[in-house]
Image 1 (cartoon, rainbow, N blue to C red):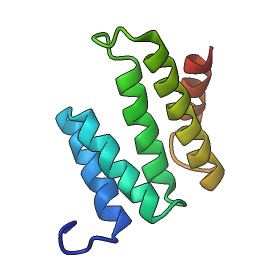
Image 2 (image 1 turned 135 degrees about the vertical axis):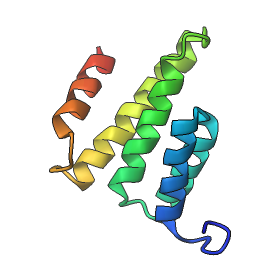
Image 3 (image 1 turned 120 degrees about the vertical axis):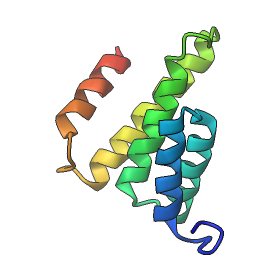
Image 4 (image 1 turned 180 degrees about the vertical axis):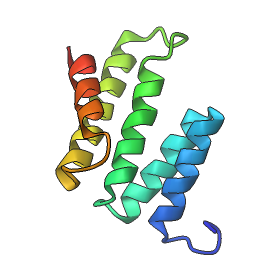
Length: 104
């Protein structure tokens, strides 16, 4: 699908989700990023990109505290964008709790 429709942001968003489920966070970030680049108003892609950033930020193998802080900030930024684009999204309260937790 992605190879056929290179400007289909939903295809990249779904691919990002699939990579997250498979545990390939780097490829998930790339594909969510492509979805956002194509359509900056895709709240689901922003939310997914935030999840990918946060997974990378809380990775216990990552010892670089500066990098972790930058990734947490990027995750929260993506989640805020997602909530701005669709304030009434599913699991809104859970996302807000995560933002609070990782902002401290």
